[in-house]
Image 1 (cartoon, one colour):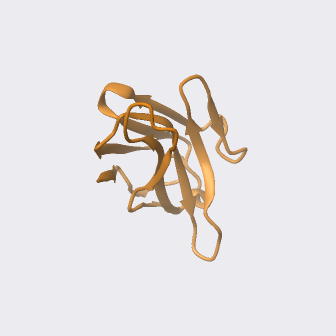
Image 2 (cartoon, rainbow, N blue to C red):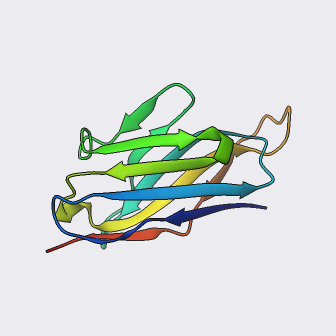
Image 3 (cartoon, rainbow, N blue to C red):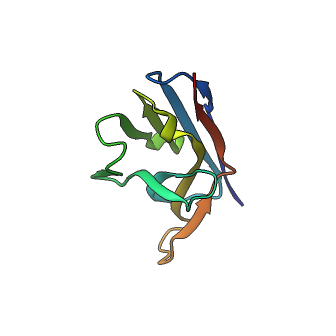
Length: 121
């Protein structure tokens, strides 16, 4: 079994910073793309940022404020969030596309349990 465990959420004032972490564990051969999504109350889940072996992609709303990076040796992805705004308030979910065995042709899609980020004064 594979697990994604997130940490680092919390309450922060507007303009503040938080760093989210997501560690993948279990039966993993390799991880292709890792990313962060978020879902605010009454809204659909949306992509925040994702990172592959050679590139990163960001939602327009977070470009220049958030940075995604990963530590492949630890199977961990991070999201550094700066200049936070109230509209960044949401549950943030980690996502990973994982290959479970050598030579396997299928990527499996895994999600973390979510971590709450609240930006409020």
